Length: 236
Image (cartoon, rainbow, N blue to C red; front, side, top):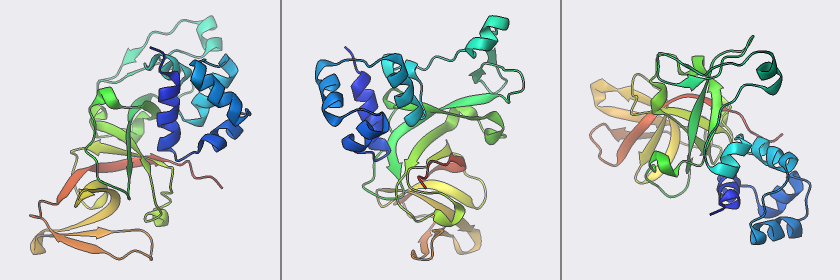
């Protein structure tokens, strides 16, 4: 079954883009887009590429639901390049004058505000975002997941609504920025661990929000993983 528009709608809703705004961004009328969806019509290659670039994914994923990594066309004509599996288990295509990259799956949840949700299995991930391999230095790359940010509580460290936060699941080390579930709400916050007091201080990076403190033994706090970086998508 053709799920092209199901995948487009999932990515569109993840980034908080309305149907009208989406149509504007791809240079089509809302009526045209609605007609395409009703007929399950896959648009021409140039429109598919525009949609893929808008949602930081690939045309292959939009059409097939699978991520296919290929070398650039011009490079492929000069010399075929075989995928390389790095020691950390990720496969990438090497390019001259380019750093190695990783594909990180995108979970459908949004963090920092809204109702709590359990993270879904990999089969439910809605796309991929490509990052430099060195962003995950010292981290098991297979633990990385990307989620979209909602809200303004972390703008002090330049994390804005719509950005993609990359975190390592189950990785907890020292103080830093983490994705957490607190009383059922998913959040991205700066955590300060005070072992002597057996407390965790939960800081926002926006003066409009107050610091929370919670006992380390509180079962309502679940630390999902440490943030290793983020992809900035904030519209200026």
